[in-house]
Image (cartoon, rainbow, N blue to C red):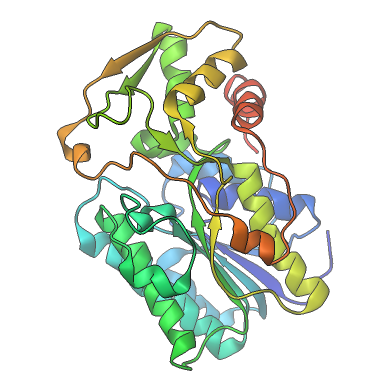
Length: 336
C-alpha cells in the first residue's frame, strides 16, 4: 500500500459505487482510507469484505469525529446519498443530499481539501433543457422527482459559491452519474439496475419483464438510457485524484459521467441473456402508477466537457459491460 501522509475519505463507502471505488483505490495502492456510511445495514457488509482501510465512521458521527480525533484529510469523495427515486418525502433527500453535502463542502473549504461528489442525471428531468453539463444552465433544469430536485439544489448551491466568490474547496467536481450498473449492487432492492433484476428474473422464470411505453414515439422496451458500467464510473472518479496528485490541480465544475450513447432497455436485456448464453424472452408489463409521470424516456450524456478536461479513458460498450457483469459477478455471486 502507498504510504501517504494524508487520508482519503469515501462517503457512501458501503454502497454500490462507493465500495467499488474503495476496491479500485486499494488496487492502486491506497489503504489509508476513512470510510463513512450508515453501517447498520448488514446486507452491505459483503461490499467491504477483504478491503483495506483505516477507519469506519458512522455517517451522523463523522463531523464530530473529525473535530475530536480525525487525521489529516487529503482528498474527499462524497458519494453518500439517499438515491431512492420512489421516495417522495423531500425532507429525507434534503437532509442527506443537500444539508449533509453542504457540511462536507464547507469542511473541505475550511481545510483546503479537494472534493469530488456525486450528482445525478436525474437532475435533467425529462431532458427538455438537454443533457449538457453546463453550469450556466443548471437553473433551467426541471427534475421529475424529489431525489433529482435535491441533487440539482446542491449543484446550484455549489456553482453559486464559485460565482459569488464564496468559500470553495481548492478544486471540486460534481459528477452527474447516468444509469450505473455493475457488481456490488446486491443490496439495492428495487433500485438495483435493470440488469440485476433481469438476471434474477431469468434465473427464476426464464423471461424478463420490461415496462410498456406510454409515449407513442417509443416502442415497448424502446425507452432509451445512457447505461454506464460501474468500472468506468470509478475510473473517472480516480482520474480526478490522479490529476490532483500528479499535477496539483484538476478542473472544477459539473461533469457528466455516462458513455455518450443511449441504448434501449431491449438492448440491455438481450445483452443479459447473451451473458447467460440464452435466447431472449421478454414480456412487457404495465408501469406502476407512481412512476408514470416521473419516468425518463431518454437520457444521453454529453461527454465533451470531461474529454475537454483531459480524460481519455475508453468506456465499455453496453455488450462488454453487461457480459463482464453477468459472467464474472452475477453468475458467480462475486463482488468487486
